[in-house]
Every structure is written in C-alpha cells, then in structure tokens.
Amino acid sequence: MLYPSIDKILTKVESKYLLVHVISQRSKQMLEYNHFQMKEEEYKNKKELGRALEEVDRGLVTVVKK
Image (cartoon, rainbow, N blue to C red; front, side):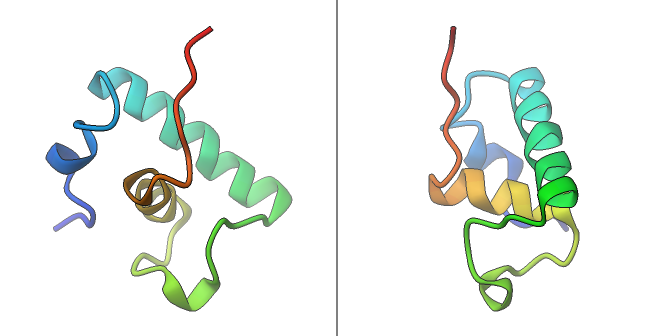
C-alpha cells in the first residue's frame, strides 16, 4: 500500500494528472541534485517517488499555477 494515500493528497492538488506531473518533477530533482526537504530518517519511503509524495502531503512542495 502506498503511503501517503493518493486520496488524501488530492485534497491539496487539483487533479491526478497535475499530481503525477509534480511528483515526477520533484523525484527527478531529488535524483539529480540529491536535495531533500526533510532528513533522510524522517521519510517512510525509500524511493524518490514515495518521498516526493510525502513532501507534497506535508506541504513542503506546493503547486503554483502560471
């Protein structure tokens, strides 16, 4: 089971498509720059996609419309 729940995160992001876009960009940033918003031991997930979901859930990554 995925943590955090997608349904919970969709209250913070308008659509699933936008969520996929934001999560994929954030996980690529994590891989490329090795920059994380939280300490390594605070994450429940070990992979970048899960960690990006956790950051959106905690409000560390926000979606800005242009």
